[in-house]
Image (cartoon, rainbow, N blue to C red; front, top):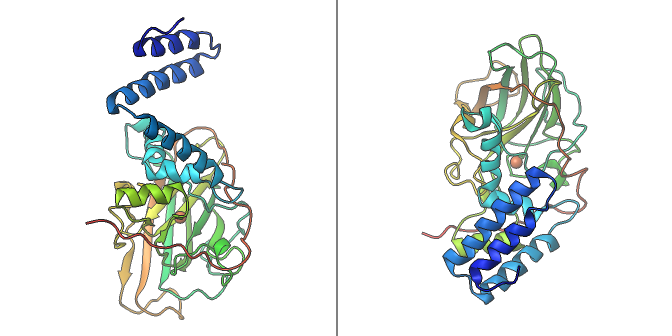
Length: 314
Ligand SMILES: [Fe+2]
């Protein structure tokens, strides 16, 4: 079709899209083109702004490597990753869900760890944390034999793969649920940490007057055939960024009941108050058990990353 006016452009593209054989791809592309064209009309996008947007997309690619994905970081920073998670879990967004973001630090082959033992594998100063977690199906029946991967940052806010001070696989472990669908382990209380701001995501956050912090959390990945693999995080409620997670991951259900104990601890002789406990029951949905592609494969070389903290605008 020959274009006669700005409106004709949309009609022409939609008309050509009808050739797309895959019906789902046709549906997605058609909706995308309609909204993208309407978006440009609505904001009256200038040529300079369009060029800047193209440059921005190129920069996302240039800042992506084998160990860092700037596009995922961008998607999280716009709330899109959490939106997709909530649309696709909890009976397609109908009910609350334990599902949450994977994040960039999951590693395969966490060390198998017996229930009740510790995931602190090298000296890691910080308050002790005792975690008890249960895994049930939608009817409340315990799920036995599920593999549960745990990973977390240190009380200084570093994952072991970023931190030469920590042993390989420190604060990571793979547990197997018992007949009650239960795992338990000892760790240290995680800290929040900044996301990188040396690329286009940093530029976006500065322009918006936002900080770049994630509130403290524990990560869970739960695998059991015939259940949809559950990826989750439990957030620390007293973290000052709990309301303003830069990745918008904090949902009401996943604010963990981390309890602070000032009394002496009867669980282990070497624990000094204050120490923390955390209990949570996760619900898994029926579905296909599938592992995600690991975002990283090993420990990084060299120093701890020095990621600056952005101060939020008033
Ligand atoms: Fe994390």
